[in-house]
Structures are given as structure tokens and as C-alpha cells.
Image 1 (cartoon, each protein chain N blue to C red):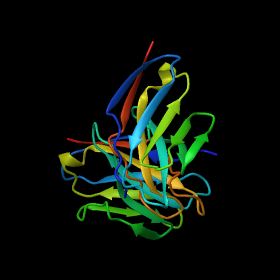
Image 2: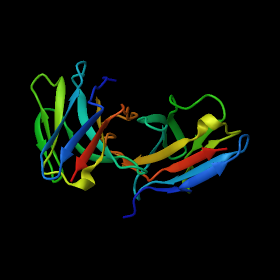
Image 3: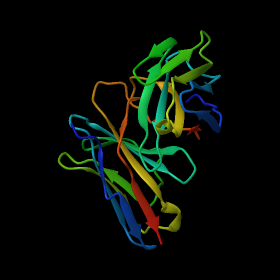
Length: 115
Length: 111
């Protein structure tokens, strides 16, 4: 059973461009979470999704950021018009249905660099 | 969500037992205590979870006193590969919620 997959692992964008980060959860997992980690800091929750539904987006910036988890395919975190402050590691995690959501399984992350 | 306090860093030597303590004075009745490990350039990895007393698995032990206001992660006979950041999280298990990570404890194992 493959773990949580994220791609790309590294992404470089210029200011004003769009960044698309993809996350494929573990097989059988229907809960997906996105976190952001700035250098030397802990992870900060952004959004929690189930298939075709956003459950909690309380950690998501109000502008330029969006997330989806379609019925088919990976979850996508989209950042429009990126700025230098968006440079960070973005981690996706997944958990199975019916299990304590504390046990989240994390992917390797996407490191976004905005020039 | 209960706030947690951990030491910023700890050093140890190979083969020693390492104990990392986390304070969570305002832990709620239905809160569990969970520890994650994160290596550089990787996502966090679940280590252990407990509610009270002692929990042990193949990786670590978790000691929780009766008042549950603190917990101690114990790593037996650490090796260089245990060098990582260790996060203590407190929250209600079984409910759909976000994980709240603090700054964690940077453990450095020396040869």
C-alpha cells in the first residue's frame, strides 16, 4: 500500500504565477488535510476535505488559496498570484474513514519557492 | 485546543534512553495525547497516542500521570537516526478536526 503521494516535490514560481500542488491519499482514505510549514516553524493547518466537500477551511487564507478533492483524482491545493511569503513546505495528510483523525499519514511535502 | 509546551531542543548520545516531556495544563476530559516525529525534508510520522497511564509500542513509550497535565515520550536506546523534531499534540480523538503542531523538540543524537 503506497503512502500519501505529493507532486511535485519541488516547485519554483515567479511572483504573480499560479501554483498547483497535488496530493493522492493512501488507498482507502477519504479524508485529506493540507498543512503549511514555514522554515523553523511547526506545521499550520490549512484545510480539511472529504471527497467533493470542504469540511473545515478555517486555516486557509481568504484570498488566492483554494482546495478541492474531486470524486476522481487527487486533491489539489491551488495558490493564485503567488507572493514571496507563500514560499514554504506544503504537506498533505490523509486518514481513513471511521478512525481517530489524530492518526494522520503525511506525504513528503511540496517545497514551493517563489522568486 | 489545549496548548502544549515542550523543550526547544535536547541532546543525547547513542544508546541512551531519551525522555521528552510535554506540558498541557488545560487538557480537556476527552483529549488524547499524540506524538509525531519529523525528519528534515519529510512529513511528520505518527509515533504513539495515549489517554492515561502508560502506552507502549515497538517504537516508544508514553507515560501520562493521573492528572494528565503532562506527558513524557520515552525513546529507548536512541541511535543517530532518531535525530528529528518531536511534536506533542493534544486534542479530541475520533472527531474530525485539524492537528495543531507547536514548535516541537529538536532531538540531536550524538555519536
